[in-house]
Image (cartoon, rainbow, N blue to C red):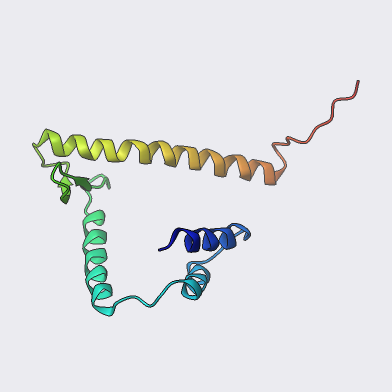
Amino acid sequence: MNRKIREAIINAIREEKAVTVDEVVEIVKTYDEMPDVKNLVEQHYKKVARRLLSTIKDDYGVRDFFAAETAAGERLYVNIAASDNLEHLSKVEQQLKPKAAGTARSYAKARKRQMEVAGQLVFDFKVEG
């Protein structure tokens, strides 16, 4: 997608307090061209396969398969419970670390905003002197 088109869509979305995927789809349809049906079918099957892999969990409910990119640029899904390949396990760890940090920051942002809206945290104050 063209960068300017992407920015226009994001700017339209940012003006909203909340938005559904269907609403974003309608905005995207006004800017983006019609996709190739053959490619869509292939993408669909890949998405189903990725979803399937992401649902495989151990007895404790922890995911077993994670995406990693090899040195050759191949994307594969590593079963971290069974893999004995240190390079693959390291790639999975490298991929998960920033996601965990990003999730923690997003959680803190959502929690802070929730407290602001609830009136428990107020940044608007005056100092008289």
